[in-house]
Length: 136
Length: 61
Image (cartoon, rainbow over all chains, first blue to last red):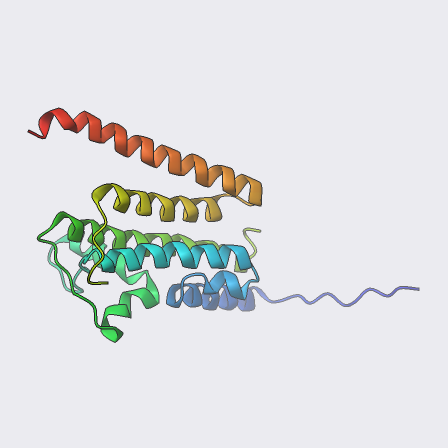
């Protein structure tokens, strides 16, 4: 006769803490949140999408928004850039050509970098929702 | 990285590809629906960009 294994129930606090940790992991490395949740495909494609946008942005010599900005759009731009996690810190560890927004391509690069952060923000929110049981 | 100079069109295609991929992965659940959504989103990105470019063309000179 088959016996049912005891169901493991986590308290709401444990679920919330796990969801927060997953979201932080998803911020640090794009796709890592989904990887922890065993959503392999989503993790890989999210990493490729965010990485593709960020690396193309740097290659086009886009500029990261400054942390201190009197302009509200600049502050929003910084938030968007910072959401790309590890890719935000890439120029500090690798020698790159640096920003050049005097050409149109550099300006495009700036938008690529901001878009990378926004896409990763969407990934973070989704991994948070999956970890907290609000989404499959 | 220093020698990477894609034209405006290819930069736009790269942007559309990456964003379509992310939208499809995050917005749809099944693999088939994701592929369909990514292709549809990519086509709309490209059509909108090319359409707007042609609309601006008379004012470019």
